[in-house]
Image: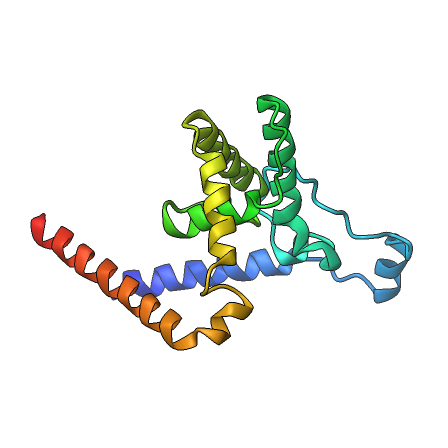
Length: 178
């Protein structure tokens, strides 16, 4: 019992010592030291730091992943001398990240860039990139995409429910087999 009180007293004393070392500065000195014209520093695209909303320019936070993707896309085009249209690369990579394999967060620029590069390179190596882009174009022109979805709502909802049902059945069979 005495040991618990002793440990508590030591922890409390250490906590107080750590807090008491902080100097209190008058507010006027703090304002003088930091120039008014000082801007927030923007974290560079190739930073190894995991970016958070407060770490970057607030008007640019959504664009962090897009800039990273475009940097990976440029490297890919240069490396493979890819001359075809690249407008749907983001759609293809995003769909692969959602359905086939987990990808790094778009906010972690270095890890996301590596994931995008890996996906694009493997699709190109296996001659699947053009087919994936063509499949995405067909899907976008299909009856259950965009404005066409509202026109065919009942059919599209039934197809979606059927796909979910099949995935659940496959997952249950897979778990039973283990």
